[in-house]
Amino acid sequence: MKLRKNIASSEEGFIFNPGTGDSFSTNPIGAEIITLLKEDNNMGAIKIHMCAKYDVDEVQFEKDLDDFVSQLKEASILE
Image (tube, rainbow, N blue to C red; front, side, top):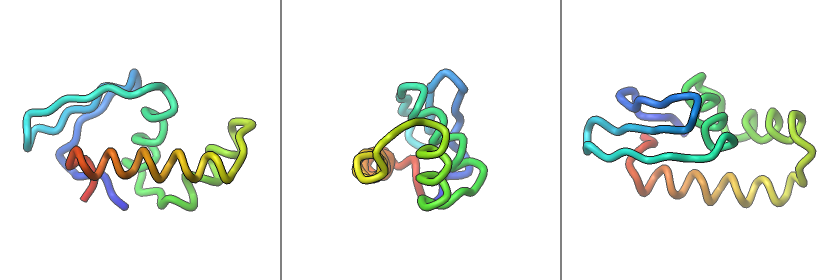
């Protein structure tokens, strides 16, 4: 899963897709996931990183990550 190259994002969670003109905002965790995607991390690496950094249930995080990725795909943020 890769972030489209033209996607702009901020540390505060603002996401802009110049291809469609759409903008979105996300919470700090979503912003961190976007940053990890920009660094070409795969879903497995993101899951490991986030579960190690935050005290979160891996199964629940994986479900939440899948949901977030689905929303990013729907918004044409991912390739």
